[in-house]
Image (cartoon, rainbow, N blue to C red; front, top):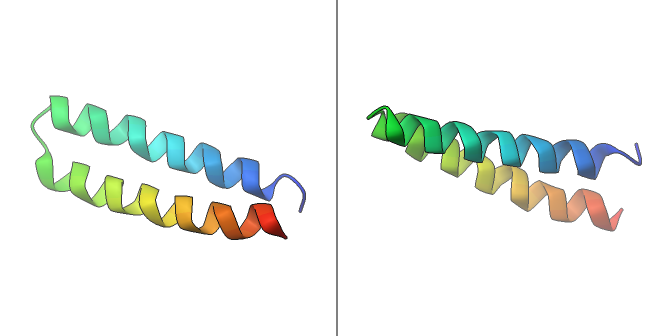
Length: 51
């Protein structure tokens, strides 16, 4: 359980990298979804880090 915040942070980073790749390949809608998903991971990362 103590590594959960780190895992969530890595998922956030992965979504960000995929979003950048999606933008470069012209998949704007996928990039928007990935950025929204990264924001959700960022939100839950804060909760997990406090526990």
